[in-house]
Length: 216
Image (cartoon, rainbow, N blue to C red; front, side, top):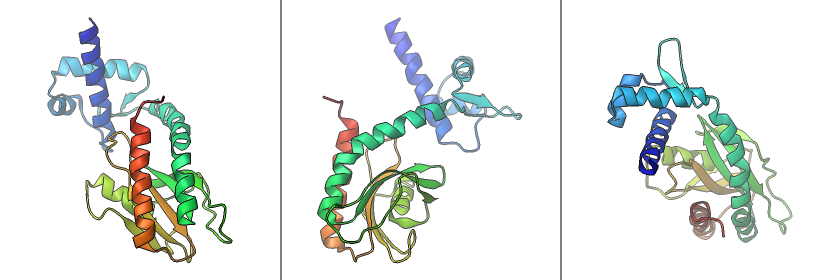
């Protein structure tokens, strides 16, 4: 029974991930084909997910993510923020620039954690909860690269796209299939990519580890 329950859970999670990748939705037949499962199994999974609000069907019978996932997403953001703050604080202090963790929500980037340096005379006031299109800003460009599966370049830059006169450097956080996120810095002063870039890459690597390892 334990093995059967684990298999059912694994199938349900695979189905949810498939729905998360499809803005257009899928029919149960398409889901069965892509998952390599029989339609009766997929229908049973969908019945349970719909009852819990994690899946829904539109008027054309196509299946989409349910709004119940929003409750989970809202719970995840504070956890991400708590895990990211120590690394962002170190990055902000060493780079002398405002550091941020940005996650993708649809076609927008959402700043879930922001830390300003303590010792600079002038720095960018970048508000937590700020949103911007993924096509704008270094953090957004890094997220697009992650979404498109691009391995290069490791760093992305921008100038004046989020705030006039501000320069940004960001890197995607790789190795976490459940998360589309980037870490970066933004400053009114010129950022030396050769000096600041490695700091950003190191912060991204440390955040990947922090979000992967179980709490002690």
